[in-house]
Length: 152
Image (cartoon, rainbow, N blue to C red):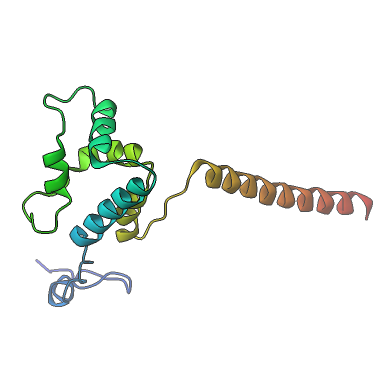
């Protein structure tokens, strides 16, 4: 019985070649210190606007009414202290934190690590308007081209 040699195309890599090549380096996504800095900066900004840490905790608890145990000032202090390395901020509370302080800085720390940008509602509307205007311009060019064909 004759064996047929498998055909490979130029866009298929040999399996052994794939195994021999080193994998791409994964990006460093440890944002512990960036997030900690953003949390503390948001708290300092809030303090300038008259929001104490106690008030931040109150506002967070109001935004999280289903919690079994309310968030305490002691917890917030532990989560935002650089010396408390095993007390990281729980991400499930991040929306309440951001709302309590009216700050998006912690969210920026998260999305920038992934190479994304935050877009607020106004930016979203501006983007949609721009897309519609571009589509309108293309449609206008297409209409003019069809008119020229009819006339010529």
